Amino acid sequence: MLPLLVALVTQVSAHEIEIAGPQNTSELLRAWTFEPGVIIPIVASAVLYSLGVFRLRRASPKSVRKSDIVYFALGWAALVLALVSPVHAWGSVLFSAHMTQHELLMLAAAPLLVLGRPVVPFLWALPRSWAITLARWSKVGAWETTWRTISNPVVAWIIHAVVLWAWHAPALFEATLENESIHALQHASFLFSALLFWWAVIHGRQRALGFGLAVLYMFTTALHSGLLGALLTFANSVWYPGYAERTAAWALTPLEDQQIGGLIMWIPAGLVYIAAGLALFAGWLRESEARARSFGLAFPNGVNSAEQSTAMDRVS
Image 1 (cartoon, one colour):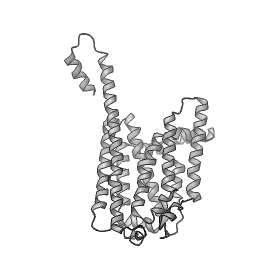
Image 2 (cartoon, one colour):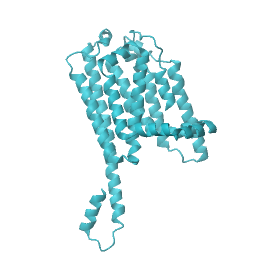
Image 3 (cartoon, rainbow, N blue to C red):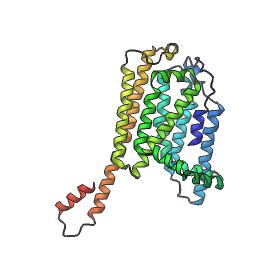
Image 4 (tube, rainbow, N blue to C red):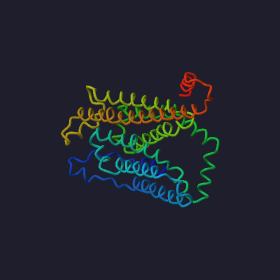
């Protein structure tokens, strides 16, 4: 994941953002961002992943599932859409486009990359000595303790929530409109916190978390992010005056632009969290039924149906 975070941190220089952005559809369609600090890490991540998958499959044809490759490719495409496509430039003139960019990072790129399981392919793409060194470093006390702490499901949930709410405080958000380095830091923190959150929910459930808490974290995230979206939607005043001079070209008032951005965070984003929560809940039910069936096969013939039912309820 490191090359992708580098793409965000090095996305721009420390110069102030130019207020000028795409003023019409024609300009928007041409407003692709081909900054080396973005393109090189993103391309490098694709090359590393492809090389790692090739080496893994050469060693063992079934070592990487096709679904993992598809997930990573879709997550990578979502990153390109957010950081390279005209969506990035559009976000400099419309708050609603900026919100779309953020949701692409947190609700498309992050979960898809986590589902793609890229860490092992990345390691296999490196020279053997480098991979061994990195593996050893990951076991060093400080690194291991730090990772265990921040990837704890509760901590990951808190980090994701704090990052989301803090960056939408008017003072911080306005700072991203004035300085691209702060803007890049915002995007990097959004992606990093989302990767942590989705990793804890998707992979953590297979360890200490379990399906039940994974569902709880997903729905509570839908609630608090939806609340932020609702506050933006129903606000009577503009939170971010920096957009006041930029929205007219797109036939929107600053307040209308803010309301659309709030709706994007509230409705479509909320539906993603809810859909993911329902998928986890369905997996929880399947797992409970499978355990109950396997437990039921172990009953001796003398155990009556009522006793079996009580025991299965306890297992579920």
